[in-house]
Length: 301
Length: 60
Image (tube, rainbow over all chains, first blue to last red; front, side, top):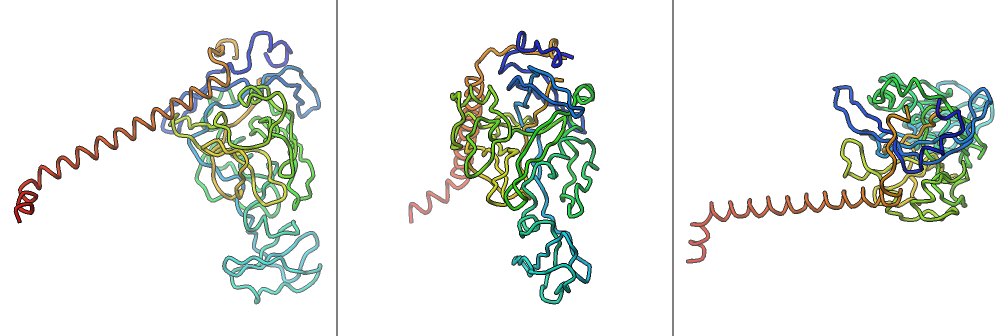
């Protein structure tokens, strides 16, 4: 396998492309080139590491808009508050974090819509979904095929309201079968503890720090900057997110239609998730329950 | 896989994204021109079909 030899940088270049295809279920096929964005030391799930592995990112987004994570509206039914959970009362569009201790009676009659249970001391996950890559719907979308790609990742996980097929549906099986999951780390937002998740996936999305943006009071550094982004942003060192037309990306089915695409980075002080806007704004974030495009990444290993 | 399907870059990464942006700008301009052209054609048809009416109004 090319990526395991350590010699890939001798005959592949940053900015070079690996030809690919994106085939819809009706047989319509689009060109789907993968750009070589970096050479990295990568770690596999068994702990083995390989140097100089080519990291590739799709040049175009897919043809769909995908939710990052659905609102976690898990309706409570128990009579009394359970240990390890918080409760959110909802009347219409007003959400209230209830002050309950384990064993307290849950005041169902006080709220007209429902009372939801959540593992977080916050209403955010219930109102907007979780801005957390490791637990996200999007991560599952990218790493599965067919329409049954969602499986609950935790006991308050709610299925996204979508009939989309998983991203792997559109990729050639020869490609899927040749890929190996690699390690990524991603920091959670403050309300989820600001801890770091480790994930192993065949497909994932870039973080803001991998796109050569400087960690700040908005997001943490999750991965070193990629050479490709240093080149297109014309900076050897990480820069402040702003508007950069070089960050605009297009859809594979409409290569002149710019689209918003998700980042892996959470806006840690808020319930929101970063994205890159269709006009090149990279400083914006949006609630995870919204749907945007994705630029999948993978490693040639 | 990479050897047979690999395309060496002919543009630098920055030139490549600039090319994609220019292509999109041109497509948008072409679409604007087509819309304008269609609107002008529609207007011409409307004027032609109401020619008598316009003359009558002008006479009044």
